[in-house]
Figure (cartoon, rainbow, N blue to C red):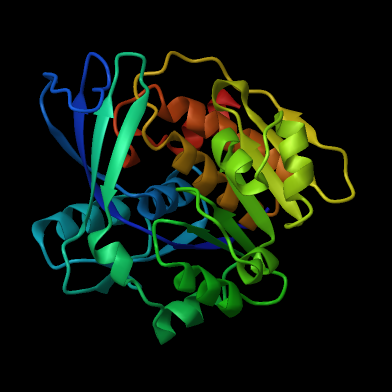
Length: 297
């Protein structure tokens, strides 16, 4: 199995996290715990997971401001072994996420995109993408950037989209994808129907060759055209903080595919990594090392 290479095109945010007894209702003020300031953002989280837990050669292509928050994010990416030479610096605040975490580990998130909304692919980005085995994007960045990333990949490379946060996708974006990674809520939004994971996957396979639907503690469903769907069981753990669990799954999945694993096996490894991540607070700080994933697999 080779190391493989992944380019993650996506967002980077500083997470402002407060533990709360419960999530507030509209118009309500509640008292929470101490504020934590940690590195996050779907793209950066997934890049950290691909490099640290997935073991792939990983580049992050994203945009940061020139503020103090940018330094926090760059340091975290570099500690994880992510290549940061394709990070753009723009005249905008670095993205910020406001996160509340309840005692059961569930989170509620509001994102101020900042620099993420100014991301544009440079010739350097395009050149790095053209040499990647897997290109992974999300929807916290402009849709035009996702289009450009898909167009830049080499023949045979996998274009994967974690369609989060959920939004309508035009036909040209659907046609550019090889793999869609979504949770049940996002799957229902994109399928424009309700039903079980198998029913949702069947609808989505009409638009994309392969789908992975994550099911939280229940694991995931892997569906590929022309093959029987595979249910990948989850691992039972005591959740502390679910922030970034889905991102850990996506990053490790991309890395495993880049290293030559089949999609169901890649999903199994990704599920183990995500389960370990929810036992720790934070997003990037919670991503396990590759050795931990191997031991728990």
